[in-house]
Structure formats: structure tokens, C-alpha cells
Image (cartoon, rainbow, N blue to C red; front, top):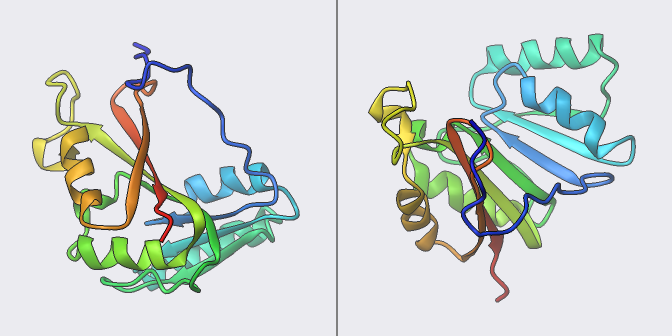
Length: 175
């Protein structure tokens, strides 16, 4: 089932060509490998994970696929370990609800965002009882917005075109 975006607008496809994108909680790099094509040869995908085993696997998979745009980064439980003002877009797919230190991790992501950079939360919809995922692995749009409200982020839009998840997009606030 395709759901209409919550903001009443047609979904907009971000142009990622040449961008620096952070895939936070990258695991083996499923999304990172797909974003590598979207950022093109002039872009970069910073694939962040806290598990050294995942980073090693990610390196091997990126090398095997000849994806030099992917840069594996070993983060910590509290910090994504990315350079300040270096990221155009950070995305967390089914990650935020799993974080032991969500406030600290989000703060480190915001430090890494360039002025006007965006952070995207993709989480299973807690509002929808038909989503076949345990409740502890879901977040409502309101929960995501509450978490973001503690940081210098401005809600931009929520896209509901995925069958079970929502994408909640925020922009780094101007100082």
C-alpha cells in the first residue's frame, strides 16, 4: 500500500550527486552501496557503524563492488565521529530507536552537518497497528519530532510513501 506524504506534497527525490551523505548505522552497507551510485564519483558516502566487524565487512563489500565513494567510519555509542560541517545529508534507517545514547548521537550528527544540512529519520510507524514489527522497534512521527526538538533542527516534511515506515526530514537550523 502506498501512502500519501503527510505534508500534502508530492514526494521529492533529493538530488544527491556530488553530496556527502552519512549512513548512520550502516551495518554491512546495504543502503550505503545504493547511495554510492546516487552521489556519483564526486560524492561520498560516510558509512558509520559502531561494530568493527560491520566496518570490516563494509570495506570488503565496497572494495569488491569498486565503490570508492564509500568511506567506512567506526563511530561510538555516543558519537558518529564525523568532521564538523562536513555532511550534506545524514540518514538513519531503523536506527534511532535502537540507540543507547540518542541525544548524544543526534548532537554529534548535527555537528557534522553543513549549514542547512538535513537529517532523515526512517522508522517503522508506531501509529499503524498493521505494521508487523514489535512496538519497541517503532516510533511515531510525534516521538521523532519530540526527539529532534531538543536540538537545533527544523522539521521540513514527513513522507509516508513507504509501506511501513515514515521518513521524517529535518534541516539544521540557522544560528
